[in-house]
Length: 170
Image (cartoon, rainbow, N blue to C red; front, side, top):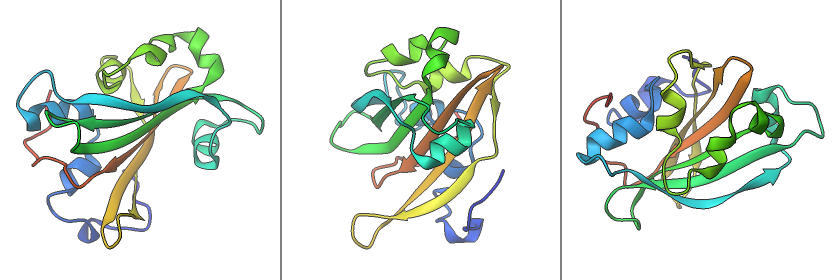
């Protein structure tokens, strides 16, 4: 795992398992909430756009390329208390290469779909911190999930209402 600018000692002990988990945060959230119907995703936006610079570099895209992106808040029983803000994106051409189901997920998190494939590979996880919400720092992680030629960039921010860690999930 790759750490960007911050070491383990900088993140609160309770956050570290969430930050460095190589598996699906969706499965870990399901275990933390203790119910199979949680988490749910509240879609904040999705569509086609030019990639942000970090996405373009991570996905190895040329200037002028397009991505399909999706931003969500993952929450438990109270939708007003999101635990994670996430953004995922992949090259538009990947829609015709088997990633079209990711464009139709609605209120379901995409983590279960992505991690269902045994041959899925994850790049080193980049961990960082973003100043947000006044004095509060928001820890984030990002990586590229790859199965064959298909690549999905995932960025996840841990929010204030993140539940207590209860293990990796499945």
